[in-house]
Length: 180
View 1: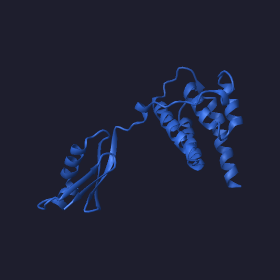
View 2: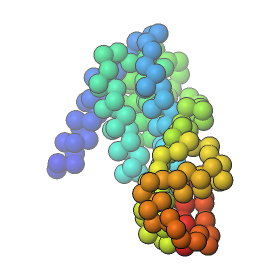
View 3: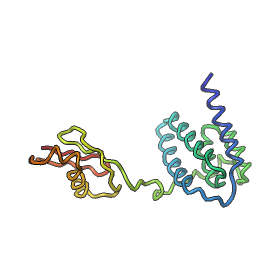
View 4: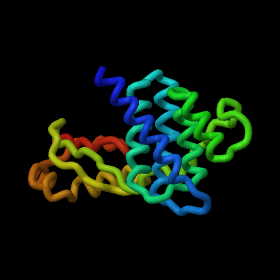
C-alpha cells in the first residue's frame, strides 16, 4: 500500500507544478535536465526499464518543485514523457497548458545532443589491473593525451616510477590500464 501512496504523492506534485508553468521563463538548468531526461526516457522505454523510467521522472519533477516558475514548454515536454505512465493526468495538464490537440497525437520530443554531452568525465586509471586513481578529463580527449594525463597522475606515478611500462591500454571515455 505504501507504493500507491508514493505514486499518489508524485502525481500530486506534478499537478502542483503545473500551476507554476508560465511563458517566457528562463530555466537553463531545467532545459539541460529536460534534454537529458528525453534521452534517458527513450532508452528506458526501449529497454522496458520502467522502474528507472519512473524514477527519472520523479527526479526531474523534484527539480521542477525547487523552482518558483517553470517554462511552459519544458513542462509540456515533461508531460509528453509522463504520458506513457500516466496518460490521463498528462492529458489534463496538456490541455491546462493550452496546447493544441491531444498529447497522444503530439510528436515525441527530441533532445539536443549538444546539451546532454558532458564536458568533463571521470576515467578510472589502473596499474596492472588494480584501480589506482580516478582522473577528471575533457570528454573529447584523445587517446595519447589520456595516456599522458594518466601517467602524470600523482597517485599513479608512485606505482610506475622507476619501472618499465610494457603496455598502456587507453580507451577514451572508459579506462586506462598501465601494465608494468
